[in-house]
Length: 254
Ligand code: G
Ligand code: G
Ligand code: MN
Ligand code: NA
Image 1 (cartoon, rainbow, N blue to C red):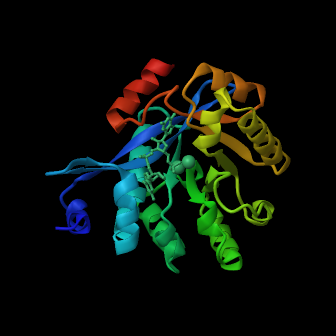
Image 2: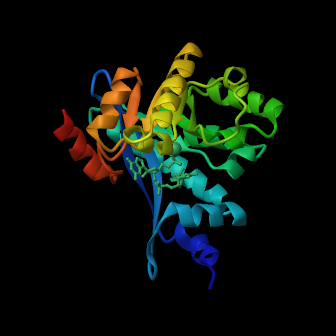
């Protein structure tokens, strides 16, 4: 049987779950946000990584119910986190390309927000350059509608997509997340240092905040601190954690 057949059953069989990857403010050293990342634990095959099943989900269209499930679960867990006393914590949610391209995308998001009574001012949506570039005009309208719901918009994997920078000030964006490939190179490649430096300067000129993803050591952190990067995310802080472990991680971090 094909993986898609098993994936079709994954939601009802409760096989999908979310883990949360902390994002830290470089200046204050406080955890300001977590990124929701989906995981699939299948009966026979065990843990299947998203790099394997997200493409299958996109091809088969299954990504749409999965994406809606992810967004709803992340909203519910954000409420749990807020009720535990971490009332300023933000939630960053990856948006699927196929889901985003649907005409009813904004409505489906709004329905989930209504259903979960979400505090949308604490939610960030992670989009990629390739999702927003194809129909720039249509996309602007969609992004403007999304922003009216209260969320912030983040460009994920920045630096690896389209080379056109013209969209950066045409779209109502708030945050750039520098792709981890540039952060990996900070320790050994002068070129990567220059690129990261340039992205941060450019982002700040455009009044965008910057997240560096894939920070794994103190050397990278020091560089980013010097360059006035706003936020960092990576294994140097923590691995992505299930909600209960996340809550104990918050306690130990304070
Ligand atoms: O968590 P991990 O690094 O294994 O994720 C691998 C890829 O899967 C990343 O590109 C990530 O954006 C994508 N991914 C992980 N979680 C989600 C999710 O909840 N929704 C969507 N659409 N993509 C996700
Ligand atoms: O495409 P997206 O940026 O959503 O995917 C993020 C992925 O990168 C997640 O699966 C997350 O686990 C992974 N990631 C985040 N920080 C680090 C890190 O410091 N090291 C490694 N190896 N992976 C990381
Ligand atoms: Mn992401
Ligand atoms: Na990324």
